Image (cartoon, rainbow, N blue to C red):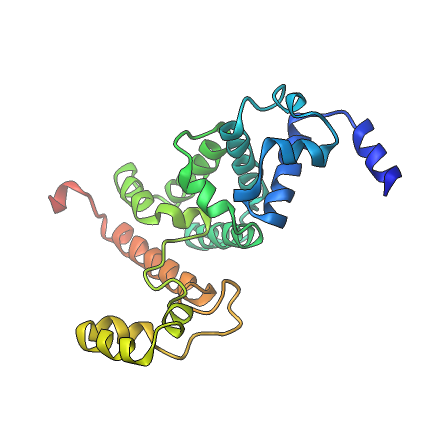
Length: 231
């Protein structure tokens, strides 16, 4: 162990090494517990040494997002835009499931780095390579939203676990007041072995919504849809 730590200390510090170590720490302990001091300890350096590579915590988080986006497989082996987009989005989802903290960090970023912009540009290019107009592609990207990164904000996120902690009396009262919400939230046919956890935000729900979107995009494209004709 001592020899391993000594090897770490002797390895030249670089931005890539700092960001990679930060991602590992976030994977292990959550991004909330990540600090420059803790990261420096992990790398065997003084905290000030980190600031030669990242200006502050926000820049560190920006760089961590770049690492995550860089892990997404952007190669598309399927034929046609629809298959290619589907593969890309599901590849992104696998990365986000591997790094659960990344979703919150991606949502919190206000600036788009070159790595993020390149990914978005590539995604847009997949639709345009399929013959989509700039007009339709614009609205398609709005509809895709965070799904291009492999996640969505679920309306019934982990609802089964949440309702399990509510007393029967309270559940009965809620069922009377919000019958439709409770009927959906209490459905028992969710997969207990979901990659995300018990509840609606599992792989099936994600792919179900993704396929609905892609089918809709395909129909609009074939119809020659334009936004001017809908306003």
